[in-house]
Image (cartoon, rainbow, N blue to C red; front, side):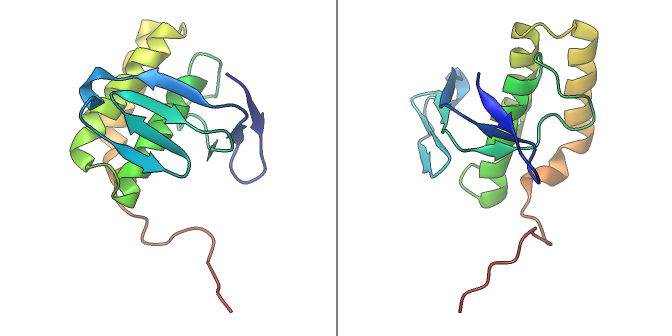
Length: 134
């Protein structure tokens, strides 16, 4: 996984990254920052995200935070139904474990998502960055 740190958003993905999620096999989304097709989620080069929320950013949670943030963004924008929230949270858990996070921390992260994550799948009522057209 290759990314760089940014001002504003913390990280920018420097090359596309994919993961397979069988629960999303019947979902097709083509988004400027990535896609879901046949169960494969691909996040494109240039996607910016803010890392893990509530815990330090470490190698054992960077990939999980990337895909989790992308899926939550799709839900906020209405491209992915919010009923897929648990799939996103389970994917985060699975990737943290696969990338070496201690099981106790994985449970802490997952429980945090269950308790605090719901509000992040709804559109932001006060979006950052005003768009102005002249």
